[in-house]
Structures are given as C-alpha cells and as structure tokens.
Length: 263
Image 1 (cartoon, rainbow, N blue to C red):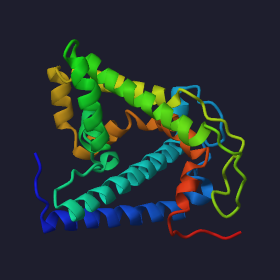
Image 2 (image 1 turned 180 degrees about the vertical axis):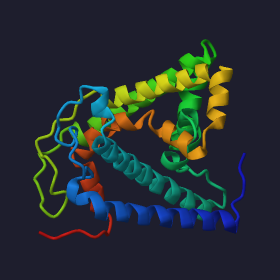
Image 3 (image 1 turned 30 degrees about the vertical axis):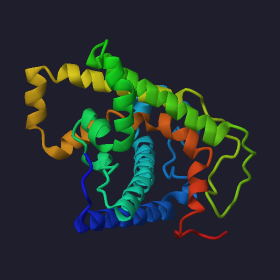
C-alpha cells in the first residue's frame, strides 16, 4: 500500500543519508591505508584459519567488525539515497533499507529479516521463501532463501572482481596495503550465507524452548546484541575477503572525499 511521504519523512531520509555518508568518509580516512584490515590477524596475512581460537582472535574480530561496518554503511548509503530520491520525485514514502543491524539487532532473525538490506529481504521473501513454503516447512524455506542469497553473491563476486578484470596495479596513495596478487576463493560467500541460514533455523528451533526464552529475556540488551553479532562476525571474512582483498573498496573510494596521506 502506497503512503504519501511527509516533510518529516523527507527530512529523516536526508539526515540518514548525510549521517551515513559522513560515517563512510570517516571509516575510509581511518582504514583505507590498511586496506580496511588494520590489525595483523592471520586472515590479514592471508593465512588459513584452522581453529576456533583463530576465528575468535581479537585482531581477526576487529577486522571483521570493520568489514561489517563498511558494507553496512555502503549498502545503507545506496538505500537511503534511493529512498530520498523516490520521496522527493514521486511524493511516496520509501522503506528504510538498512536499520543499523550491526549495532542494534537482537537476534539473527532480527538482523537478517528486519534490519539488514530490507529491500533485498523482501525480494527473497516473495521470490524464494513464500514459493518454497507452499510445499515445505518454514525451516526449509528460510534455508533456501539464504542459499539463493549465497548464489546471488557468488555471481556478484564473479562479476565484480573476477570476470575479465585487468590485473590491478598498486597505488601507494590508495589502499597501499593491497595485495595485487590475491586470488578470490569461490564458494566463500555461499558458505557464509549457508551458515547464517543454519543459524536462523537453529534460532527458530531453540526459540520454542522455554528455558532459552527465559535465558534471553534476562540478559541486558547490549549482551543480546553482542551475542547476535557473534553468530556471524567470526566468519565475516568469508563474505568480505573477495571484495576487500581484490580492491573493491579502493574502487569505491574514487567517488568520495576523505582524508589520506599522500606518499
């Protein structure tokens, strides 16, 4: 149902777009010299993570958090700018696509279903979840939606960082820590979304347990948010590596003004 945008809606979209843009410029200014991996973790050194301890290493988690924030802000900027354009040009209220999932989500379903890239979630719900749900359980339908998302992101990896791309030349003034010889690992995006699909199904199963319900309700909100993000954060490099290590964020930088050291 279409709803007319009020002046408050347009003002909200404008403020949201401005805040997101400023956040991106700050993140680029701080972390661009390190190719968005300022902490010398095993993944930053392109070493394989082989144990739970490696995945929970603070340096690794720090880099993964920066990855999550960068993608949240970049996708959020596109969504908020699009919403602002729609509201100004058509007069209709647009849906806010990114609702600060990294810092505010209180469950995996809240993160993926109500906060992260809501527009794409709607497409997957109508195009995958609901059709599968007609002849299967909601668990299978949810898992299929995540698998479809994984396949789509594998296509994006192939399209943006692999297909017919010229070898990158290092630039000391832009992402001077970039490894121009990095080869992306196919399947890592698929594995990331499949994992989160399993987490979603597990949440639904455990949510029926009264003990788990009472346990979650007794924790302070910041702890619930922390536990929620930790279901995905240690594996965020599965998603981010193909883009970051192939210099996609460096390519994005060409369209922004930010502070950097000139060598």
